[in-house]
Length: 462
Ligand SMILES: [Zn+2]
Image (cartoon, protein in one colour):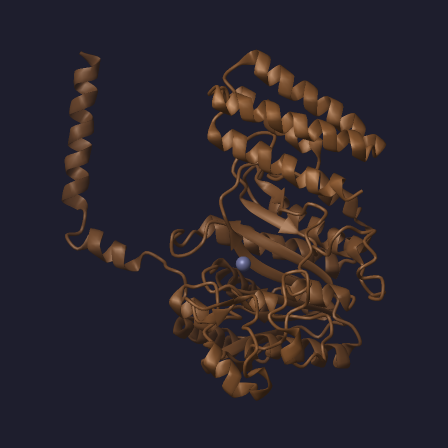
């Protein structure tokens, strides 16, 4: 009987709600659903912020894209510490502009908080660095190779840069940087590769390089640079929870490689402190548990001197990368995701303002969860997770893999390269048998086998 009464009440409420709903409600709301800003909307928002700020925010055109679109930079504050925030260098990664515009709205205001930030920092924010790519929702800018050769006759006959995409007819602008800020493209350096610097061939990269040099001339030093991106949708090693924001410090190979010894201004510990500040910001400023704040993939061999953040880091700037899950167009407008970006930025800004960023312990950044492997302990975490999830469906197989990894962990700690190579190979053999027997899924196999290959490459070289 009770159920019946409740059923009637529920259907009465449902009918009432339908009756009360405005006829045009549904379609009007659908039209009003927020979407990522277009280039035109961004220009309007920035101009509105500048006008309302009474001179506190200055918006300039810092340069033009290869296709002639304006690239805007908003400058706010008069403090001695310079922070550059760069968004949307990849055209299909659009949360950066949204977070930056929201941040600027706060900084343009009359609150004592905003004034405090403006007194201590000079923030130069480039909400959308790649308007050509953003308009097409593609990673690259638009700069067909024949236009490149027309602009740089010395490149006639040279192979296109390795980061040129002939299908997109443009460049991955975040490979077009070099720590040598005076570099001019030379045919003999092409096509290059990911372990070498980029060529400053795009007008976008040149515009950011010039801005960086101007700020350096004006202030003597650019304290920090933050680059805002999107990635895939990984889950953490230990818990299998989705990563909700991944943060990183500059990938410039193993600390002891010697490759960057001439770049004496590089301060990786400082970048880790800034990365930690971002992670803390996301956690403190959210009203949720933020268990998905993770370290972006950074096994020790990762080395991308052509990325903007690496080029600036080699020149003495602390640099931080944000990577948000999913890309456009697949991932639609998501306010929670945008808030996370903004909170990470406030985490850095707040600690620059009160100076506490210098007192952080950068090593604490390395304690954040990972979703990738840099050592056998990470692989052990994966075997544990897969066992819990039932992706390894045989208890004795789980135990054997875990034992093998425990042994490897000891050789790894002791630096025993010969044993590492030998036992990684036998781990791979066992793993491959388990796949044939259907004990592990192909996803488990490909992750653990890939991890073993990474470590094999590393230890074979020693
Ligand atoms: Zn990106």
